Image 1 (tube, rainbow, N blue to C red):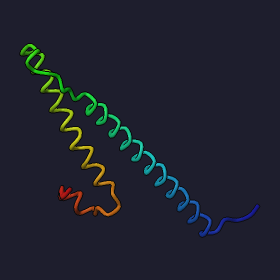
Image 2 (image 1 turned 90 degrees about the vertical axis):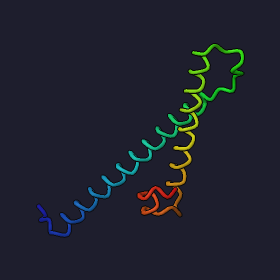
Image 3 (image 1 turned 180 degrees about the vertical axis):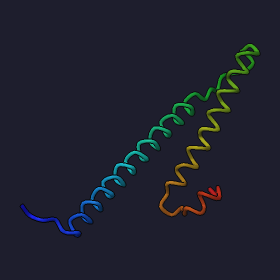
Image 4 (image 1 turned 180 degrees about the horizontal axis):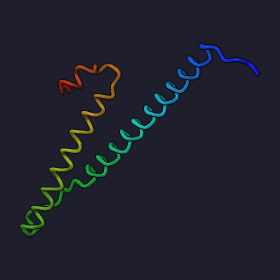
Length: 97
């Protein structure tokens, strides 16, 4: 039976840490993709219907959907700017997007 030295333990630990980091990065990328898809679905809800032919409640619903779509569009743009490699962590933390 061979004996393991400290170098083996260090490499095993380092490999486990790197594997964990890769999984976390993949998880974060999947979360971002999910959020972008969700925002896209909100953006797709934008309605350009003619308000003159709609009842008050229908107009209110259309306006609410459009606000949500516009807000989702703005958030998606900010996420895309934040994901840009030239954007710094400080800019993101300060909301300078």
